[in-house]
Length: 375
Length: 76
View 1 (cartoon, one colour):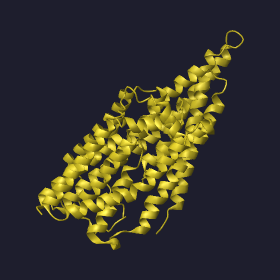
View 2 (cartoon, each protein chain N blue to C red; view 1 turned 90 degrees about the vertical axis):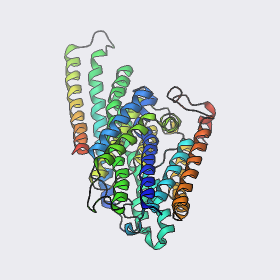
View 3 (tube, rainbow over the protein chains, first blue to last red; view 1 turned 90 degrees about the horizontal axis):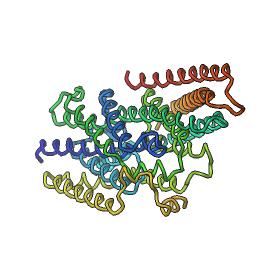
View 4 (cartoon, helix red, strand yellow; view 1 turned 30 degrees about the horizontal axis):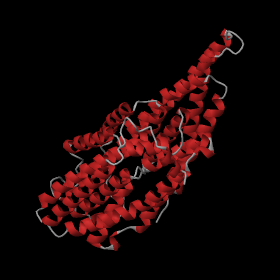
C-alpha cells in the first residue's frame, strides 16, 4: 500500500474524529447553562467553541502514547490507527443520533483495541490496563463528580432558603457562565491533545517527523480549529438530554454540577491521569438533580446512558477491527472502508433529520420523551 | 494491573472539597448581596444590609480566587 495514502487518510480521519469529539462534548460544558437560560443556545456553543480552541492551544504537550498503554504501541501502524478512528467516529455518530452522551476517549481506545487485535493478535492488548485505566475510572468518575455535585447542590439550597429567589437565581445564572467556561476550557486542553497525538505519532511512524518531535504548528492549528468548529455547531441532541431529560434543572444545580465537573477534570489531569469529561459531567448533572430532590431525577435516562457506556469499548472495537482488517488489504481496502464509513455517517445524519433538534427547540422536550425517560 | 486507588481518593477529596467550598461561598455571597433587597417589615436596616453586602462580596472574592487558581492550573 502507498504509505502516503494511508498517512493522508489517517490525518483526515483524525480531524473528522476531532470534529465529532467537539460536537459530542459541547453538552458537557453547556447543557445546564442552556437549560437554565444562563446562556442563549447559540451564544453558549460559540463560547464553548472558542474556549475549546484556546484550551487546545494551551495544551500542546501531547500524550506520549495514543492508547495510554492499553495496547503494545510497537504494533500500532497507520492502518491500525485508521481503523481505530473509524470505529470511534461511527460510535460517536450513533450515540449522537440517540442523544446519549458517551466518552469519545473510550470510543477511540475501543477502536484502537479492536484494530490492534486484528493486526497483531490479543497478546498486543494490555487487558489489565483496560480494567485499571478505562473500566474502573468509568465507574468511579461519575460517582465522584455526582457525590460532589449532590452535596454542593444541597448546601446551595439550604443556604439560600429565604433569600430573594429572583436575585439568587440571577446570581447563579451569572456564575454559571464562569463555571461552564471553565469546563469548556478544561475540555479543550484535555481533548485537544488527543488528536494532536494521533497525527503526530502517525507522522513519526511514516518518517515525516523525528522520533522525539512535538506536534508541528499545522497539526496544533488544524486540531484546535476542528474541535472548536465541532463544538460550536453544537450537539443539540445530547444537550437536550443532559439539560432537559435528566431533570428540570435550575441555576444553582447547574452551577454546582459545572463546578464539580471542573474540579474533577482539573484535579485528575493535574495528577497525570485524565478522567472522561463526559462521564464526569454526566455524573455531576445527575448528582445535582438528586441534590435538590431525589425524585426529580429521571433515572431511566441514567440506565440508557450506562448501557451506552458499557457498549462503547466493545462496539468501537468491533468496528475498528473490521475496518483495520479491510484496510489492511491495501489502498483499495482503505478507500472502501472510508466510503462505507461515509455512507454510514450520511445514513445517520439522514435519520437525525426525522426529528431535528436545533438551537430553537433544544429546550422543548415532548412529554412522550420525558415519559420514556422515566422508564 | 495496578489501580491508582490513592489517586482516585485524592481526586474525590479535592473535587468534593472544592465544589462544596466554591458553591457555599457563592451561595453566601449571593445571600449577602440579596440582603439589600429584603424588607419584610419595611425598609431594611442599613447596617445589616451593608454588612451583608460586605460579607457577600468577600465570599464571592474568595470563590473567584479559587476559580482563578483553577484557570492557572489549566494555563500553566
